[in-house]
Length: 319
Image (cartoon, rainbow, N blue to C red; front, side, top):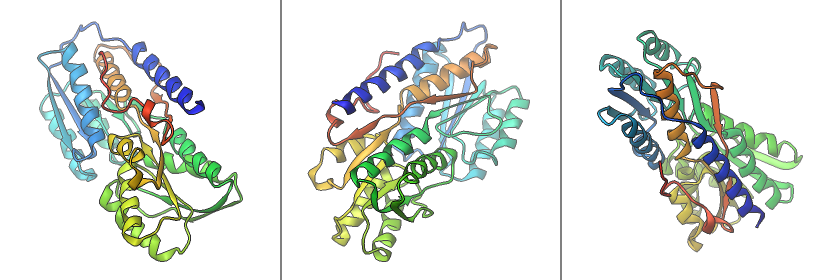
């Protein structure tokens, strides 16, 4: 019951953030918008882009919204920003490939009069940043590990692409595990590439290197599922897995007895993130700056016990 109340409370908090943002007065017409995401193969980014597009076109029906994936290639993302500027974008919604290295491209857009809103991960110099409270997400996912292990055991932190969201999740996890001297972190530097295949590949390495693992924290759900598949192939079942995302795939996994090693995922609100991002951008175009440059969307832990009450990424919303 405690977990269900937590989920409900976070949902209400997210809703309050969304309702607090209002559509601009449309003093300036928005004709073109560019959206750059990590990968269009990631369903979370597709949902974010589609939701943002819907919000923008509700306010500006004639706006041309272009979404592209940079596939975690920073040079490709820089070229995308250049293309958005050349196409006359009124603003850019950006899932940054690197929090610092992308800054010159952001400044170039701003010099051309194009506001840049970073979402899901942070970026230095962006006009605003809207993202999950990733330190919180990593913390609650790894607190579940510490509680379930009763403060003692061998834990793997499966890392990922070094964007700010991933870095923060690992920071949050480590902050929790550091409180438990009898928890040993076997590995924390292997990059699962943010993907199922990447998670599976690095997990195969752990299963070869470490004869006893009690828990694995993965930085996102695709890596968690890849890790579970690697364990099944290797015939290993002594450990459990937690992650971050609260994706449709992890919802299914948390209901699937065949994937019982996956126990929990800290949720991301992929409705609030794009809605607040789009509304913040539209306000900026019309001269209204956000009260805070960094807007954090809270996270809640989805488990096998409360997944039936979780309203996930595909939940319908009234815009």
